[in-house]
Length: 226
Image 1 (tube, rainbow, N blue to C red):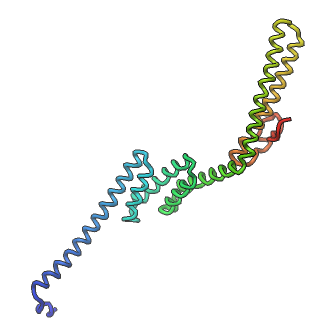
Image 2 (image 1 turned 90 degrees about the horizontal axis):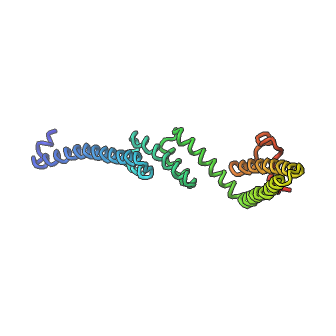
Image 3 (image 1 turned 30 degrees about the vertical axis):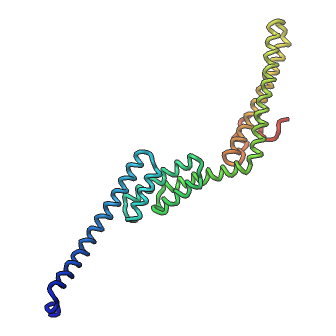
């Protein structure tokens, strides 16, 4: 330590000042980092309370850039990612929603909420792809079903005509004709209802319902009505 005695006092003071400044700045930097993280987390919390998941996710993400290990920032980001993904999913933006979920899972791979949401979105995306792929067939089928229901008006008109005629003639044959039209309406409505059930199942999952899942009016079919 004798070498310190031969150094100019001013130089020694400068070295001490530099070392003290480095220590002070190190502590100050830590305080600034905590302040930035706390500020961003607070911004995220406020945005979530206001229902703005996008701004909340951004605020938490900025906090994580400063301190990736911040527990409040990580928890907040996962919650914001889930909320934002639900909004995107509700708008039909399945790819954006899945990307948001994946970013959330990158922060917390064990998040059960995000994992379940991802499965839901993937299933919805698959169903939409099935519908888009089969759209020409689906469109033709719904037009056929609508036409079949429109034809019921003609049968119903004949039924009403028979009842009206009976009001003048009191002829039992007019009642018989009305009863016949009523049975025809029941049969056609049952047939159309079965076709609607199968059509709904095709649109929602891409697979027809099993026969036992339909009504008891007979086997359903999407083939053109006879």
